[in-house]
Length: 146
Length: 220
Image (cartoon, rainbow over all chains, first blue to last red; front, top):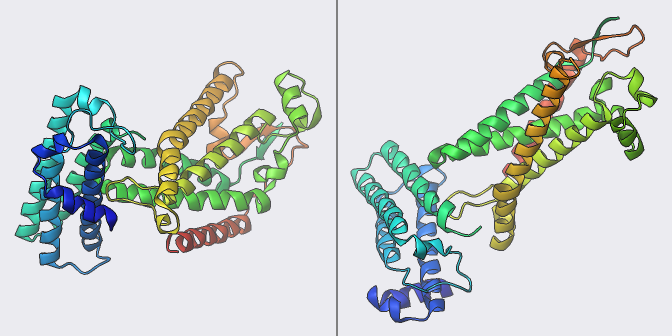
């Protein structure tokens, strides 16, 4: 809950303003964002696996949230915003162009997922979901400390 | 010399199924995405196989029983130094060094499947028992599963293959064929592994019980 409130609080700052906040806050901002993203992915996943009945408005909300959070995360790595609880590897900054490229490709997958939810074909949606989770993992494998 | 059944059919099927499933687990993990669902299912199947083998180590035929290939450290050292005395001279099952490989593989594969049940990918997938433990503990299980367990399995498989090659090229002994046909050339006093219909039916029952146990665990 604390994390969510923090995320909402920090969301009200503009993306650029994040570069002014202390590293610790930037790390919390990211972790809160990814926490919310994970929750939305999980909720969608439960629907796609049939463990929870599929409801289109709910799924759209999940997909919209994932796309929005992805946009926020694209600006959530100002220089030096590491240390403490952060699991981001130094390569996030030393290989910044490559990292940004991977973020962008995840964002494209998120947008394709969003379009699939709107179109309403669950078969395609499942494929898109798999593609998105795969593209998340590419970054985790390379840029997230184990 | 005569042909003697050493590896009963259930033990052989266990061996090859495990080899295939471990390979499949590796491939499905690499592919990722939605295919990870299969990685989970394969993990459950491997766990069931390990349960089966653990039970078979107590109730299976002669050479499959753990009691037949648990050796003291002294025996293992003596075997490595090349002394052929002791129980080795009359047994055709796992030798003292090979037995270490069997126990190590079973232990590591068990640890790998068990840790998988508690692991998470920090994206959307998580093992069926994650809800029993804290996120930190699940992250530790994930660390073992992804960073340690897999490498241990690769290492043990590597040793396994090197040993097979060593026996084949240096000692002119084919270890693979008996694991397929079940038979070895042995002297007339050699103990025969029971591999009757009854034994095989027992194995099916044990396997079904193992599958039931895994089903129970993953649905806790």
